[in-house]
Length: 54
Image (cartoon, rainbow, N blue to C red):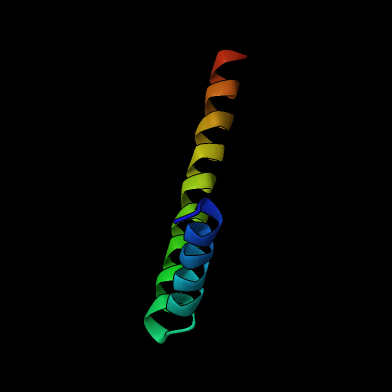
């Protein structure tokens, strides 16, 4: 099986999964988790920079 066909299969599988109610719910949960992680990381980086500049 060629790499292109394999990637196309992964794409269609993910696309079909995201079209289901569970897939949409999972995608929203993953996006929410990523936003929370980035927010906490930004707060920690800001706190460390503030602490080092004191």
